[in-house]
Length: 206
Image (cartoon, rainbow, N blue to C red; front, top):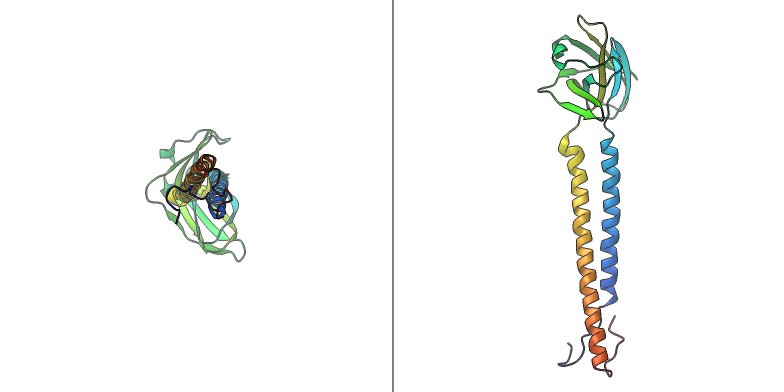
């Protein structure tokens, strides 16, 4: 306990270490969040033309979407209403053993915009195993139709986790700055008190 009238001891070194550790953790967490955001932003589906086949390297237990490439394809713009899921015939097989993968009609319609390209969801499938999967499609009563295949974008699953990482990094960084500010204030107070009382030991207890 500090005697009455005596200068308070300077902050212990552990507080400096704590502040540095918090700031370092915030920097690393923020960097990881930025990397994840950049990777997550790379969501452009891989295009192909129906009738035709596209081989995608799927990830295990990952949902994929077969899109209608409505804008930006070499074939020009396509009216989303002109290609109903009912006239889009697609089969998905696992290349490894030629096992058929269930293709289902998606509930609702999702529009994905990447740069100048626009995609509208039509069908979906889930790759149970990782590896190459062949997606073969044809459209009734049409010669060529631009399609694309990409991962299903769960908005919270993809970007929510990134946001949580960045938020955690921000909170940790704020705590680090707060600790550093308190330490700096304590140190300034100790120096001032030491100058006012030359006989006080300036070595501190840390």
